Length: 268
Length: 308
Image (tube, rainbow over all chains, first blue to last red):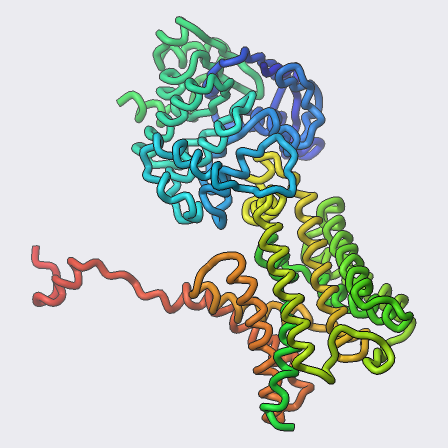
């Protein structure tokens, strides 16, 4: 489904701030894979998602989605293949527009926008049915401006927008990190439901090792711009946080430092 | 000149400038761009219309060509922003300067008289009731068209582009194209307003656009302050903007009638707009009353202080 081959990206080249963010990154996902991505700060997790969604062009290497080479496509054209949910709940929705209008924009992702009604009555009815299972009471607030919703509600709407037009690839960029623990758990639950129900191929970046192990069928760990640990299936199911840290230390030859505090909180 | 006698003229002028304010609303409110192109494109509309009219072209055709000329100016601003990476406000200033020369070339001189006795015009200040009807009809038609447009798939995506460009791009919206499109429509309407204005006042002057954006902003701010209280939807907002423009010209006519030095008018307009823009900020900074929790208020009532 997704094939990343020999991807390189260096920021601020030829300056004192030169930083190689991606270094010979190789990754291949099968259709329906739900992959969690972990790694320390600066490991290249978000950079990888930026590369896939086309924020900039990589220095070298190719990205293929479903057999199509998208390496040179601008971001808005790649939206036909993929959808991304950001960490900041404010980023994924248009605050001055209604919930229904936001969903309507998302429903037309990947198709050419025309001079026909942008949000039909029939659509609105179907959105009600989609919003109801979230259990947030949004189904009766279709005409509410999204800016009036809480961060968790906005993130839930964003997720729904992502799944509305089934993307070939769903990118979740620490999408629960800005929420309080209870809301984060709820949003994760919605995520899991949407991903498994729709069989979406998903990359989920998280800082929480506990979640990384609990969700998905495959886990990759990044370090210095490439994948250093890749576990899936039974092996992943039985993984513990201690084992994961051990894997990191053998693969990278250094301690997993930056997320220790998060880890200790998660295991308590 | 009696103030009452000047009222119809003020209303007609307000309606004609209302079109301009609607155009500005698209860039300023929907795209979230302060587009200074309008000071030039309103004159472009007037110049194109003036030249065509005095050459005997049908007044409706003149208006269409004026609209297209304004749209072209908007496209220039849009492209210099999206393809050249110039901040929108600077793009607008640069296009405005380009238009200064272009307008002079179109007109061939600094001003042109369009006598309503010689040429067929749609509206003239010599017949204000008629002018009011014509200008109001144009405003209504434009509002209906915009209402329809901004609820289409393309229109919604233009709205979302201004509201959240990152999200729009992630949803497959061509953000750059939409910005150019929005600026084209915006400046097209501004030029249309300029063309009607030229016919109404019976002349074109190369300086007539100076400070147009301030008048437009004043109309938007006055209009929205009222319409937002009635019903915050698109059509009511646009009607409010036209109403704001009329209000502006009523006040304008009133202060002139009071005998105010007309040299000072632009300064006063700008200062008024300045305070209107400052108002929401001040309100938030200095006039938001702290919400004191009920339990603390009660405790203070019952003898004050915390008694643990």
